[in-house]
Image (tube, rainbow, N blue to C red; front, side, top):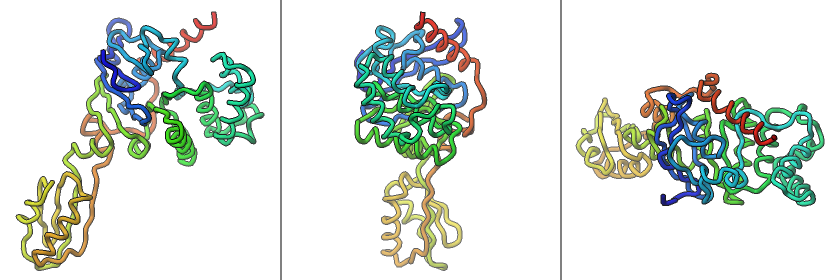
Length: 340
């Protein structure tokens, strides 16, 4: 298998109880240093895929390589190289923030002096200095999420997996969390693989997006590329009342898919509205027709999701599915096994 990205999945399949196929032949690559969004309806296979990539679940078939390591061949090696933040809280409520960080560092066999240095640096980065020596049970939701992000970074991974990381946070908390992620990506080249229920996060924060439905990848690309696949932008040109008919002229411009005229306005469906607008205005002016107004409307990511899955995307979780429960059960069993 030829590895192309820092995360490379090829034909990943996960079957539960010999009959429930949660993931069905998933393949994709994540490039170094990018934020890669993974979207899908509840129960589509998002959490199962993340768990396989992060070596929490063994694939039924197919292969995945993360940071040069095959997750099936060397799962422990993969776990040492990645950071993982799941939607359920993992911070110990009865320890302070600083203690959580130092315990996590100890799990990676980081020497005590180095653990203290890294913990202090992360406390500063995550703006937790005033709360570092308070019990986590006194933290707000946003503070806990920032602490969990710090814990996931204490061993300095190059790849970070985030499974619904901002679920339940208020808009300010979500914005703050993502500002830290962007800072880490920009300054340290961190690669981020994220699932989210918030389409605005995927639209503005992710370099590329994959949509999974019924265990299959149904679309991959940047948010703009996926929107373009719906047929492009809608540009409305308003011209001087009583002007000549410009339908044929506008139809002949590059990137135009269709033109509808209503009174003195033209509704133009085009591949990309941004470069089209100056071309259209110039063409109208050359024809002696004044343009009195222009609007450009981009398809939304909600419309993209509806197009590829046949379902609307909900911004809040709908509860645990059977596969979610199976994933969580296997995680718990794995943790208990590791303590024996």
